[in-house]
Amino acid sequence: MAIDPAELRKVMGCFATGVTVITTRDQNGKPYGLTANAVTSLSLTPPLLLICVDRKAETFPHFFDSKLFVLNILAAHQEAISRRFATTGGDKFTGLDFHLGRLDTPILDGTLGHVECRIIETLEGGDHVIHIGQVEHAEAEEKRPLLFFRGKYRHLADS
Ligand SMILES: Cc1cc2nc3c(=O)[nH]c(=O)nc-3n(C[C@H](O)[C@H](O)[C@H](O)COP(=O)(O)O)c2cc1C
Image (cartoon, rainbow, N blue to C red; front, side):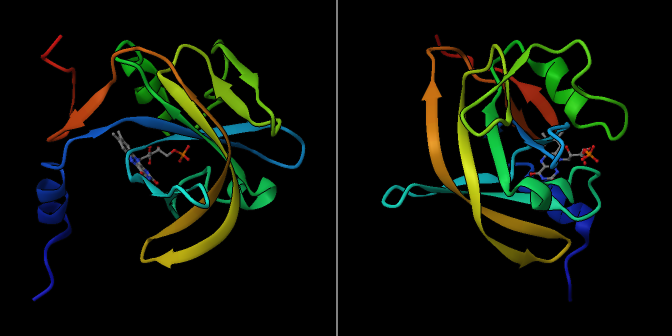
């Protein structure tokens, strides 16, 4: 018997993760983005990572426009940014500090780190698609991460 989606969400919510905002742009340079934790490092040689994007997300078509994305890894103080990018509609970038990276794709300021990627393959994944990104550039800073566990934002307890 197929598992109930709400039950699966509850079980997978026990898998603690960091929180990212994946940004992209359309052909005219308009920025888009969504909060995501279904992301993973895939390969070091060649350098690859993958992201999973809901087909229903407004941002969904824009990954196919530019075939580019940036994985922005949120710092502990950036919960409001996560909430903003987890809400559909409106211009999510209004009043937000960001700059364009090497691929002319938005990089959020104040994060823990970011990875700039070129999409080299897209796979079917049920109600999501899996974009495999070739890493063009990556950097990180010494900051504390924002975490997500059992449906709530969390912070590291250790120093
Ligand atoms: C912690 C967290 C993790 C999420 N992870 C993903 C994810 O990996 N992929 C995805 O497509 N949506 C994910 N979402 C949901 C999207 O952020 C949400 O559907 C958002 O409204 C999409 O924005 P858009 O419709 O403007 O593109 C996540 C939300 C939260 C709060």
